[in-house]
Image 1: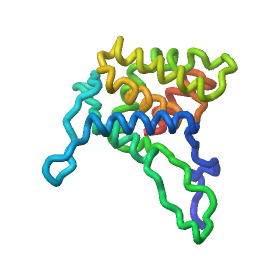
Image 2: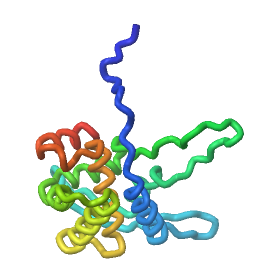
Image 3: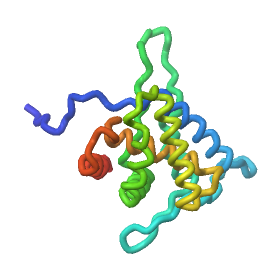
Length: 189
């Protein structure tokens, strides 16, 4: 008999549809800025978006990194309608990749400020779509003003941060204590 102690019975966390819409928009904008065709090849421009200190060096998040992180959430999966397989699978962000680790490292570095921005209006009875919009707007403004991110990329980094935070905490980031949220972020990578 196999040991199943580490297997969770909880279904994977599904990002809110409002956030997935923001992801689609951010991914489309990133694609236009980062990808181009040279001859018969699709080429990614080396587009630095954010650089921050980590350990003994610096970490850089590029446009291609964000595109790689967000793409799995927007890819459409064709279903065979003849077999009637019901709902399409949930779109889940992987936090195990090198790119996700960079984003999580940044979140941990700026945890207090990011938590304050994301959870700012969480106590109010806004509908989910308004909470998502408020959080992304706050993160976008902060990324431009405090981190020096170019405006054209600020929404993409803000959306990526919110996706990572909600995925790591299964949507409970603002309901958790700061310690619980940090532990969930550390476990996610």
